[in-house]
Image (cartoon, rainbow, N blue to C red):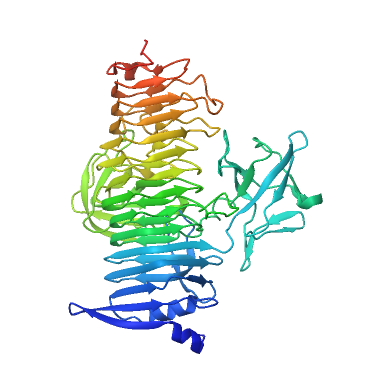
Length: 605
């Protein structure tokens, strides 16, 4: 335990404020030189009240991991383990963080904020950044495909890396360095957006040698070589590069983020799991103005896993992340064996789901029986006995279904949210703008989207990620889609593509009732919609313009590609531009397809 200087003590005030006969502990912070981690830890540890309010004076605050609170954390879609947490809040009635424009600068492997088992959370007026990002980047100077090398000129100011024994290591902070360069992506320097036609790469060079003028030559055969002049960004390999989100909210409710900006994080920006009712408003994730960085955070801007209540994201700006703008989903677990008529053993299947709380007493659970992906029997949980981080015994009030067998799936019916995104700008980042997997009402409206991969993705998965599930009520309207699906791999502005594995019927309907209406699409290519196993898709009143601003990547692809669909309507849309084929429709989709009132394209059998 360290002692504070007199100057520091005078700079920090701890006040108890009593409002309406209930005590709220107020901690007022002023910026001081040096690490403030222990100051914050001692202040929080000294609070016995169930209601806490932290008020920052505007200024810059620095935090290091040395004296941070530590605990073992299970964090969905991140690496589990002991985490250094600067602001840990657990088991509180209410937490309010008033930033007043304060800037929090972190160093090393830390999780800035944890809210666990809190009844009310409010965070406003904060900016978050790292002094050195957990990234390595350099300008691509030259490539030699035959000899298998590329020359890059690394960025030095504001970055931490070394060349050691023919190997690039980074970030080399507090003894941590990635085992390889890992995930690699090229960016265009002028606009800091992912390079046109880019592919995801994984880099583990044979050797690296120093060349004149600060250039490094990296010897490595690659399937795809980006163009010289692009900026290559590296974030380390999968399994190492998602330490923690900036904000982790778990088992909490009534959450509000307002005017919160994140310039960097060692994982996702806002991660909410098994939490209820939340809003993220007037906030942003983007590279600081004037910064040489081309990447903001390591993973998704926002991520909602097994949440419920109303989730709203509005008037936000998300840019330059290395994964999706948002992902809203549940979790499939797999039946390992039947124990008795009321109890079964289930398994969490993805390595980044280990330790996840799938269900609790009173939750309603759907049973999904192979080969059908449909939600069948509903049963209510009477108890859950956790065996370890992957296995648990779950008992139900009613008998288990007679057809239950090993490999069937369970999905939590209780923990699904309604979701609304409006007034947001999402662009210049890897992957998708929006990934949707909740059965309840979903509205995506009045947003500006530009995406490397598909802008809107629907993908429930019964393998690998095991992210459920079927959507049943989605409205996508009045959005602007500009320059979407420019990845080297084939995508579309909207892509509906369940991944269900070999034990499931590949023709069975999955997602349902999707409306894509009154949107404006400006595209360089022809792929607009790919829809697989949808029952009920309305594509109506959309204005589509092909501008040829960039070379088409898949010029032979159809505008609309329908596979095993039912009740698809394509009505009153306009299209300006060229195409070789408007429709690719299989026999089952054609039976109930309705195409009428469109301008610029026609349906031909």
